[in-house]
Amino acid sequence: MEPGPVCRCLLVPVVLCIYANRIVCGASDRRTFNTGLRVKDHSHIVAQHNRLRSRVEPMAANMQKMEWDEDLASLAAQRAATCHSDPSPHQPPLHHIGWNTHYSAYGSHPFYDVIDSWFEEGRDFLYATGQCKANATCQHYTQLVWATSSRVGCASQTCPKGGEVWTTFVCAYHPGGNWEVNGLLVTPYKSGLSCSLCTSSMSGCLRLWDHVGGLCEIPRNPCRMSCGQHGQLNISSCKCKCDPGFTGHFCQVRCSVPCVRGRFREEECSCLCDAGYGGAECAEKVQFPLHSCDVMIDGDCFVVSSDAEGYYGARSRCQERGAILAHIYNQKVQDMLAFYLSRLDTSNEVPNADFETRNFWIGLTFKPPKESFRWDTGEKPSFSSFAFGQPDNQGFGNCVELQASSAFNWNDQRCRTRNRYVCQHAAEHIALWDNGT
Image (tube, rainbow, N blue to C red):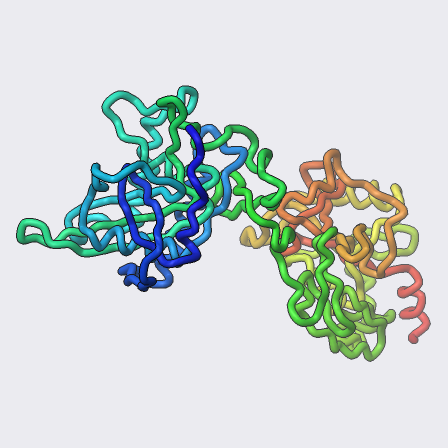
């Protein structure tokens, strides 16, 4: 089938000729038609189309993301205003814009049910042969999932029929689909790993939380994130470089913490307290709790918590006591802590199941600006005891725990997970306390 001329109907005034689910364009007086839909309906329609297009079976390798188009919506409104459920059979074949139309009793089928019903036609579509089952209709489905149809506009119109009120719901698609070659329908999309056959102009891949496969899109911002007014986005690493005085993944946190007796950690927007001081600003004098040491290793005192916190809550709890989350610098400390934690009986667990795992936080986190794990003091680990297959960034884990199921080797975990934790009083800090300083 030879392609027709390029249609300019989205850019200039048009007159409609309706036939076989397509239109041809010609000059006319431009008019704006009421689509019968609210603005928020436009977003719902686009989101529903993209969600369904991501769920085709087999998976699509070249499915493009759809966007709303007001010119198509105006064309759909003109089509709906005719109140005909079928296109006129007396017009010549037309090109470039595809149609889906539904005609039903008023109020019986909201538009989202109509779109779902079009997608359900896919049960009767045989992808391997590119044909619909005998006596079944699939053309609404194939247009809805036509891979290269990237723009959509819809309209709803109430119509009188036999003394009753009916609704015509119409969607227009550009570029249109449902093409045939020598009597055979062109396959609506290419199967394969999602986004594996995107074109160079649509090299981005959109996959939202309710999507199954990805959708090809123009990569306006391949990171799909913003650093706001106080940072610059590095496109290659998808990381924010924050302006002085700001921190956080998106440079959204203003840092102005005074550290009375301690050192300010810019990356953390927090204080690292001097020995004998605690609290958020290191202004509180604290007593060394020697009686509460659970394990003494080379002069360092390690205290295992009886409560559970997220990572940053745990760090604050340790700091309130003049301590830090535990740092494990060598195999000896790792082995001794793992042995102690493995022997904790059930009576020593957190009461009332106020925790999510049997794991324990230590003072190690992943620092995106440095692209590496660092201890809370800012030091890069010279010793590592990550469990097999870790760190894997599963669930965007940036904080490190001692994982019970891996013999208390290390695992990267989401920082908001509620774990018990291990606080550490370093030997040099204890010596300062003993001297009464």
